[in-house]
Length: 456
Image (tube, rainbow, N blue to C red):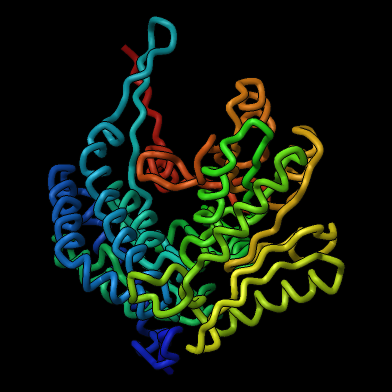
């Protein structure tokens, strides 16, 4: 059997890779374990040099790597280039801060005892990664994990196997020794085999809520730590004192970034009634200007979804929401290429039990809600099983304080769309998952925070 990636724009097979069998998996895990014994003892200066080389290679190969991303999962070529640049920035960030993050720290309790905190590596860590940001998701998991002295094995999404191979090559070219980063080309049913292996110490998964539940259950069975970044139904709240033009502009960008397939892209737009009509008018105007087509063309503003089945699932969610009473505004944009395209869509008057209210819509579909006041906005915002990020548009300091304290999410951005950055911890609450990636907190997820007490 083989993993295959199919170009969602041309529907042609783009890349493929043989699946690893049970013997292959055992060998790769053993190899990773051996690599950890040496890699964990390397000095920080060597790890820094590997990261800086990795950043250099990413930027040198940016154009060809961006084409690879676009051909495998349909991202606009400009966004693919930005993804590679962001991975390079991540490498530089940890190269600059790793000494500070990993230097042991002295703590004093009373007058007689001194305590020291060390951050020691755990061992082999499994990353189960999604297709929507095929480089960034892997790098934001792998870089802080390996720079802390661990080694990683990655089960990437089957439809981006070309990206997976390219990433492993880049780590080797950067000076990371063989076994520090390895791909596992396995089916979902083989994941328990990996998690149950004694050499594996922890798992990080970015994916669906259902995938997170399955992995968490397996990790619990075998007592392995997990970090989970799952679904989202992020809110974009526009209050009556907002800059409506900029709010609508950023709302459009947040909803359509990555062809609508971003975990922190806004999905639910909550707007106060006094400015509702003005915001909706601007929002719809922005949607009407979308140019759908070949993601390799710079004039295209919306490409295909990553796979045909994902497009079919999204259309079903929209149709079911309409059947339950939601009002719809579709923007029929001429496009004759492929079955993975979804016309941009805005839903209004959304029933509480409809998919558009309770589920994540992963594509160019926006759900808009009209509210009377800030309290109703807060109630609807928190009326979700997810809690990843929130964008709030207001200049009122009391509203900023209220929403920053009471929104049940992992991040609140004021007058800006939610974005990730290497220096800022990233993660959610509720069914959006648990644990953090990026920054110092992300690095500390997969280390042994060891306390040492000295008696003088």
